[in-house]
Length: 100
Image 1 (cartoon, helix red, strand yellow):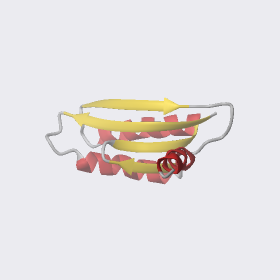
Image 2 (cartoon, rainbow, N blue to C red):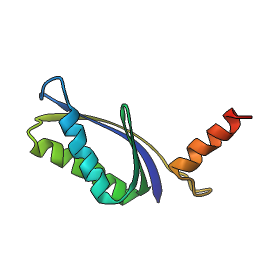
Image 3 (cartoon, one colour):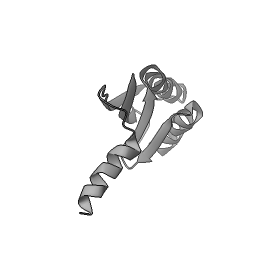
């Protein structure tokens, strides 16, 4: 099953700036080869369910390995069985209607 997720991993107990932890998580996501797009408050990732969930787990493992004692994660996800739809398809659909 294909899934599109919106992932936001926030380490706790590491101070105010979390950018180095986010950068590490981005390296994990990039290494996965999955289609992804970072935005201001997270990253959209698409691919097979098991591969995407493995990346979420790997992000947690990497951030903990950097010394973060706690992590809070927000994960929104969507699947559909009626047809294939990529992240780009979803954005294009809305943009085409906006420009009407």
